Length: 314
Image 1 (tube, one colour):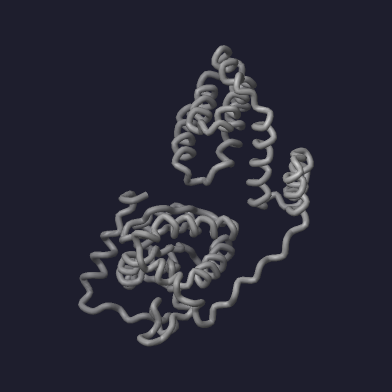
Image 2 (cartoon, rainbow, N blue to C red):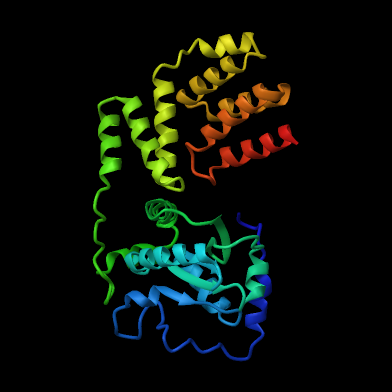
């Protein structure tokens, strides 16, 4: 994403002002007042067009700034924002959450080329480096943030400094969520190698909660694990010999993916979509999409393959 979004307009707008804008009284500086420890609330800030330079761009030189673009009328935003605020407090200043009301600050939304909300960007060294849209489960967000910090820790000393401090004043100790017995049953079945039972358990969760992202991701993974365990390496040669056999192409793609040949598996199914029609084409496309679900949405291999699939379809 670096370079794809131009933030220079807001930066210049802020720099033209004769004096830096005052912070809202309810928002203390991220590093706390001189001689005082930072507080949990100081890691979540409301940003406007006037404060974007100091609160986002300048802070991003020290630690990552996660920009949450939201609006009061947006119900999904009201699900995502509290989770991000909780994680920011737990982060203890290793990253900052900057909240932007897009209705009140349209120029910021324009700069980030926002198409829908909620949309979240990470700004590092005054450049956006990654983003996502829509509501994400807490554990997925936690892992996403951890990956960002791991990638930047050596380059941004502020991350390690924040992590070395004790918990911020007013920060509550994270309370582990009680285990969901439905997921426990599925995981127990998986540990025993009973893929059918694990699949049935996740399907039961989704029957009651169709939008449960954790169960959806787990089901895709278990289904692939079941296929991969019985994958035949000779399936690749068999598929190459029968390019019009969609079932053979699906089996070969599974074998390639199980062997770590991700791009080859994706490319195989994209080409199958290109040269087939009707039910065969739908079967190849659906199998490819199911393989996408095994990876993070922003995985560059998935992004490239999605574009290739779109070209093959349209």
